[in-house]
Length: 353
Image 1 (cartoon, one colour):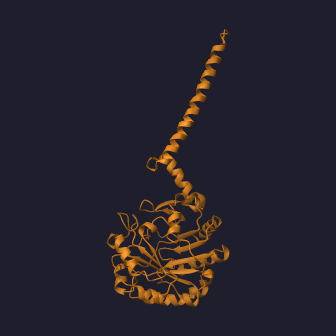
Image 2 (tube, rainbow, N blue to C red):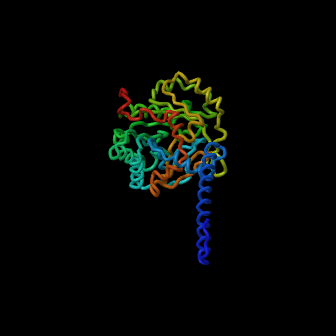
Image 3 (cartoon, rainbow, N blue to C red):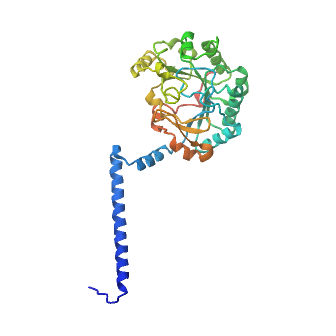
């Protein structure tokens, strides 16, 4: 045992004791913290909010292999179920759009899909054409594709930009013009179906893979499209279940009221069963569709749809791809499950032109 007789040693002893107690406290606090973290991690419903956010950000830090860039919201059609409506008229300057695409390529993008709105509407397709050319020639992307309603496409666009485009998807929900009128998939007296066949022939002539997208809803759910789809022979026929997105086609702030277009899961399955013989059919239910797309809006912000609405990240032009993609809500497992990665370069499709 040691005795301290010096009257000045007491403060030093007291300080030593306090330092020791502080170290012990810090040690046990650390042990408790990490023990609780481990418990939270094993009980999914009791994960701490902070750790859940960190885990989400780690999960979402993924490679943007396939990106959908909705560079415009404006459209000349008024489809009642549209889930990306004309809430703004903004379009980035061409050089800024190219800068963003370059950032995406540097982060691992292999496929870019241009959509809208109607992508051929802005600058009569020239803006779109220049982006397509840039992505194929300058960025050397394996796949460049477009989704369009087809109404604004001219043959001279194919002549100028067709070589740089891998896939053109045309939206067609019905082969009955009256049904298209009810849906809003029309402009004036033009025949949407006749135009679809014309574009199919142009794709064949100018060596662009042809694809069809259809949204199944209350107005077309009982239709039999097997004969027409077989005749058109697209490389893929994407069949979507009508999806509600708050602020877009549902809710007070929405520009569309899509509730009357919604069908049940059973109705969707019945439509798929009726068309099961169509080999190019690729079905997407609400579950598969909602979080399995990397969507960039007109400001190049990723849109997170997990809460049934579109919550934007910061723009990749401001914070970069790695930071922005953390807030995309992207479900890579569902992306792969729904067949999001496929042979998407026309050079590898071995098509007979």
